[in-house]
Each structure stands twice: as C-alpha cells, then as structure tokens.
Length: 485
Image (cartoon, rainbow, N blue to C red; front, side, top):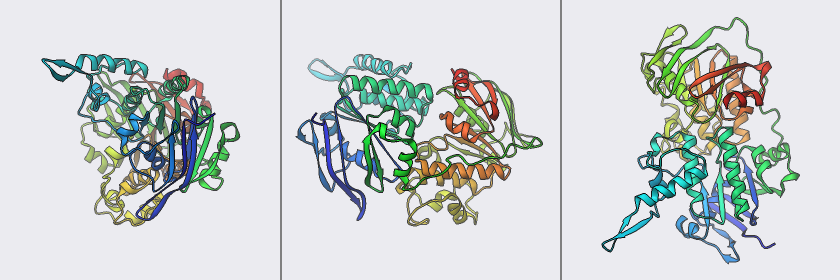
C-alpha cells in the first residue's frame, strides 16, 4: 500500500549544530505511528518541519503522491496536516470559540458586507467541544480553563480541519486517566475515518498501546523503527538513551513512625473549589494527590501556597498558622511550589539558567552547586537562555530555583510533565533525596504509576473533596481510579 506520507532523509541544523540527521519515516492511512525519544532527540523539530513551522535543510517529503514542502503552518493545514502542540497555541484573553476559529471564522453577508457569524461559530464550537466531551460554553474565556481543559480545546481545533495527517505532541501531559481515555477514543475515530495519526509521547505504555509502528529517535537520528509488537518498554528506553536506565523509581525506606508533622490543612473550603479538605504531611514523607481533571488538585496546591483565596479552614506550617500570610511570607518560612506549567508560571524563558535559579533567592551563593545537583545540561549557565534548553532541563531549572532556598515543604504539581524517561529518573532521584533529608513533599500527578512508585501515601480527590487516603502497602491502581471516579 502506498504511504499517505513519506519523509526521506530529512536533515536540519541550527547555528551549525545538527538537530536531525537523515531521518526517514512513512505513515499510512488509518495508522498510528508512535514516535519516542529523549528531550532534544529531534522529535519536535521533525514535527515542526512537517507542520510547516520550519523548513528542512535537506531531504524530501511527499504527501498523497505530491511533493510536500509547506511554507508556513497555514499551507500545511490547507494540505490536510493538523498539529496538536505540546505547548498550547491558545490566546488566554479570547473565548474558546474565538480560539477555535481564529483564522477562519464563519461569516455571513449583511448589505453586501462580510461579517463574522457568531451564532454559527458558537454552534460549530459546541459540536467540537462535544466531540472531545468538554462540557463548557463556547463563550468561556480560555484563561478560566485548567491546563487539561486547554489541552482538549487544542485537540478540538485539530478535529475541525478534517485533516489527513494529525500530529499529537505530548497530548496527555495535562490529562488525568479518564481524559486520556477520552483522547484515545478520539484517535480511534480518526483512524476509522482514514486519517494517519503521528503520536509523540514520553508515556511509553501509551505509545505501545496506540501505535501500529514505532520510531525511536536518539540524537537526531532514527535509532530504531518497526512494528509496535517488536518493542517492549525496556527496549524502547534502551534505544532512546543508548543504555539500560535501571530502576526508574529509587528505593525508599519506610517512613519512621515518629516523623513530625510539617504541613497541615484543616477543613479548607472555598465555594466550587474545595470542600472540607484536610490532611497532614510529615517530615520525610512523599504524599501523593490523585484525581481527575477538575477534582481540585492544583487548586488545593495554589491555596496552600497563598496564590488563591480560601473562605474557610486553617493551614499550619510546622505548627504555625499561615493562611493569612502572603506567598512571599510562606516562602520565607520554607514553603516551595513547582507549578504544573513551567513556561508560563515557573520560568523566565528569555533569561539565563543562573538568572532563573536566582528567582527565589537572588543573593544566594548556591546557584552553580544547585545547577550541578539537579544535573542541568547547557552550554553556558550565565548566558544561555532557558528557552533554548530541552523540556527536561527546563524542568530541572524550575525545580532547582526552589532548592536554592532550601525549603522544608515542597509542593510538586505534575513534576515530570512533558519530560523524557531519563530526566524523569533524575527528578525522582532528587525528590527521594529531599525526602531522605527530612523535607515534606506533596506530589500531584495525573500518572498513577508515578504516584505508586514514589509516594508513602496517596490522597484521592473528587469534586473538591479528599475521598480517600491510601497507605503504600494498599496501593492499587483500580482502587485509586474507582475512588477518583
């Protein structure tokens, strides 16, 4: 069968540094091609070439038996290529409908003049939101949406274009298990209508489950390719990093029975957000929080850190009430917060690595030792902008800026979102070392495997309430999902 898409010998360099070296791939109708690789392996560059964002230096592309060399994303879209980006391309100040139809609003003519047909746009937007099972009004401003809801709006944008090729770049990084299952059903529908799907993810189990064939990239080259059934997760990791990575989750000692309370929440409540939420985090404990998108996980962390208001309840840090204090004052007392969106909330992307590490404590002399401790890989700590780093290295900088302040309690919201398996292992090692040193860690994650691999206890949230507390000996994926649902 003739492939729908053929890429042959694609190469690309930036400032003389090769990023892609003669990469080839094919994608056929009704097929899912899975692509995996470490951050910096060339995945996003390859997809940006396919999506018309950048041009290749060498190589050929053929789409539906015709030469394919889009000059920009709009030309790629016109040829039937849709791209769901990892870094969302949405305008927060605009509504969902305005984002969905930004470049192609439905129009009507009034007295011979073409005007935007907002009623038709709202109707079309509702159909797309129904397709991704997102029960929101098309008039809702995007700035009011959670990260996971924004991800589904980005997916809805791609569905609107009846594309022949649909590229998903890390589409589940902000989605809980239920929303991920919803996305996988959408991918199956795309296959059924004859589209070719290219699925890029660090969630290797998802890549194996969804894909017909798999391509592994390493250092800008195709390290391995073949039918999905030929790849175990162990083989995928070995191909990605060039070596066996060993145990992903570090060994942890049981929590001592006499460990002291560090962070306590008592009866936290805010209308529509939280309802009587309470827990105790102990010294040296990794306490996980599971739950579906919209369950209140991130909102709880923001309230604990003082970013969002709380109508009722008490927050204690080492026995001291802090609910009346500002975030800056809570930082001084030893509280740290790694947010789920490093690009918007965690880093100054144009600034250097050292400038970002100094954000929490500008006078610290520990910047370079912390950079070494978290394993940041870059050309120059003082001059290289963070935006030029891979996602994994960006996350290490976002984590490192808090380590400079030597916190007693660390709130981690999706700490491994959008990073590869090698960087994950390094971050897990850092978290385990912090816990061993007595730091209390609250870890929010959409990945149940991550929580069961790292945590001493898991709290399960549902509709703003903590519905269950499960100790490590009783961890069970099905039970956690059952409570969350």
